Length: 375
Image 1 (cartoon, rainbow, N blue to C red):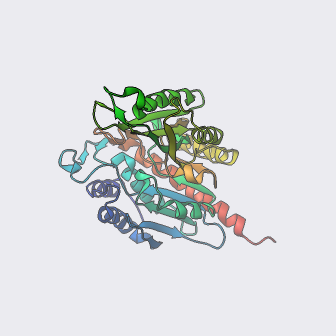
Image 2: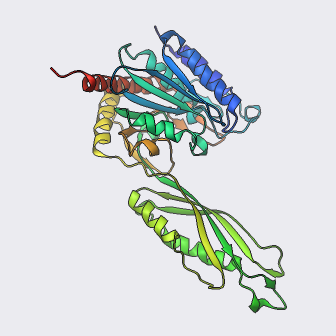
Image 3: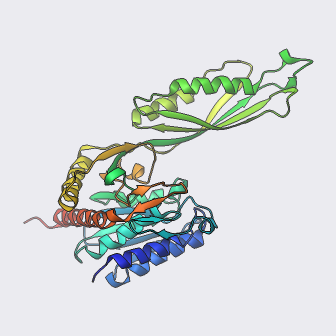
């Protein structure tokens, strides 16, 4: 059975032209079914795991013992329905444009092509999830369950420049600052009030002092709301906050600090609610061994070294890295993820496909060796 360049481009065109924003279960299911259809000649096993946001599609080949590689991909995109009207699929040869083409329908195509070249006795498991772009809260349990059985997790998220793999990702926290003050007339009784908005401003400056750019800890207050009208001292204010950390130690520091924030005006009260929905993705020694294998394969295919980079964005690899060695960024290479100029560089697709295929084979061979009876 073969998988060629024309088949890959047709599949990519079909997937991009199926709009599948997060929470749109119908489009997500159609993307998954198209991937399954492309894999029909391989007679693989599959199972649907249904959620309210669309199913998780599990495609697998098992042998007794460990399952070999776990591949991770997602069918949802950040683009709302109707985006294709103003941002159509465009094949310009080496560059292919369209909503979700890089993040991560190109990765789905790489996964399909890679499995066509995996020998029939190699075990693996591939999960295609419906909710990665919104936190994977409904998929996380299954992802972690499968990761515990895997030799390595291969995440088909977009790669970095020149195909670099993403060996470190920030943990992501979403917090809400809630402040209660005392309402009063701003002209008649200003001293009787305690402004929640003024306290919010002080808290924002304090949050900035918690950042540590050297360690990769960033804090962004993205939304603020408060008060009722200009002549009333504000009785309430809220802020929505994004916090990124690169180490577990930094995550613990931030959590502990936000549990006991300072009060700049003691007549107000402040609390931070929320937490980290993705832990930091650390690159341990076993993951480094897998990265070295990937680099060796890449150099043999392309004749150039493979870089490993740390990035601020998160993926489902954040969940698996604490469970099993994880290589992320094995998907398409291009630019503009989540942006109007989103596109992939088609020249990297066969190299990427070969890299994933080789890693799946090596992981499967390791799984079979570990499950073989000792003599």
